[in-house]
Amino acid sequence: MYATSSAKSMSNSIPSGTVMAYLLFISCGWAVYHFVANGEFSAILTLAVMLQCLGFALLGLQVLLRGTSRGISARALGLDAFALCFRLSSTLWLNGYLPVDATGDYIFQAVDIISVVLVLSLLHRILNDQSKEESEADSFPIFPVIVGCILLGTLLHGDMNNRPIFDTLWMAGLFISALAVMPQLWLISKTGSKVEALTAHYIAAMAASRALSGIFMWYARGDITCEPLVAGYNHAVWAILGAHAVHILLLGDFGLAYFKAMMKTGLAAPLDLAEDCIV
Image (cartoon, rainbow, N blue to C red):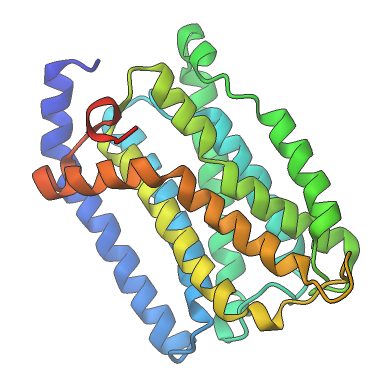
């Protein structure tokens, strides 16, 4: 769907910027893990939010390189904004859902704040750029998602903060974040299943972030507590792990197509999900 000249330009310009973004992430992640967290396992939760921030930064890089936000879902970013703000409502002043190493003192929260700034900046650009046709394509119904996640959070929240409102907001934020990719996948399906390379990297970074977070939650499941709805059954653990599993499952076909494209043509590869996905 994109012009040949645009594709060539992107092919030439993406690799250096993308490689620099990944190198910066790897350098910062290594420094945080070794020098701040002192190699403690809980630091992978901070690395997960750093990967999420990397995803938003890659979208910003795409907008800078192309001069347009075409192909990026405003509704997906809107859900991400809600999820980040719900999480920050807890982590900015409560310790229940923070890593126990030193990164939980300030780095975890600082990365989430940077992510919020990136998301809001991207949303502003998209809403200014978006044509009527693009707005109609980006039509995934997010209001029921937000309401449903808040209701589920109210029902299934843990008590790690020992403050029901903020435990609910944290859980609702997790559920929203797990589903936030759906409007982007919806937009891709409505616009011919073509995915710009950096949009693909953004989605992949979100999946990698969720995988790291899921690994941490699995190993920490014995420390997660709640007021059980059914005696002897810790519903919060399975709600948290289930949210991570749903996100990974939503990206199953995309992950296969992304991996195949990277193996064939490297970091500059745009994706054609109609051709590369197994449906």
